Length: 332
Image (cartoon, rainbow, N blue to C red; front, side, top):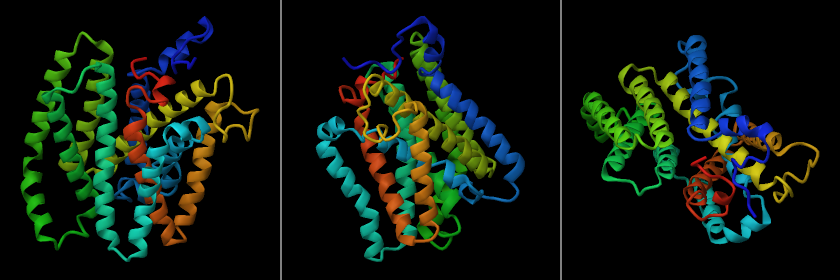
């Protein structure tokens, strides 16, 4: 029988296992993200505008957690069960490479990519909340997600593409109108999120997760849109997203391969624990891809394709009843 990711097999590991539950995972991720954001602002804010400018950033954040999510399916049983999904994921992976070979403007490809990135980040965090609430999303939760997503897209455009789109009249109109309204939208988001959290207060775990998650989103959006501290806001939300994902995939892989190593990557080094191998493989593979992307432009398109495949698969593999959910329970 498959084991739940937070299954406790002896009193000795009861406390550390319980620590890695939702919202415990988010709290640990939030703490890590906050510490890194403070460090970045303290040492780098005057020198860099976006996290990717910081030396070594791309080797540690962004791509490693994506590789971690994909390598968790390096499992013959999973590949068979996700066969049709994997075919679509391969198509997603090949799309940016095809656009590159056809000569599409990289600027607009990157804009579309960052819009999808904002959608992915917001959807992941709200998706975990829905799993904890154990009810279909109500209108209020959908509105909270929509406002967060809209402001997230606006924040990405402002942080990454303001200079590139300075001459675009439509972008200029949107920016001039919505940047003046973002305070009102943030205030509305605070009010609605507080009301929703109160409505689910009896579910302490779900309410705690929702409050903490929205505090991070609102703080990051305020830093980017309100204070022009894009670097701090982007670091906060990216590290939160990446570290949460790493916790989830490592815990899943530990559970899935607890008695028998079904993941063929982890059979290569049978003496090392899975909890160590997951991040090691992810950092090594991602590091190689990042290094190659600095020297070959086509590898940038390959990395974008891998990322799109990750976005697609993650939207499906954590739904109720999937093989992954047999080894990880968001409800703890």
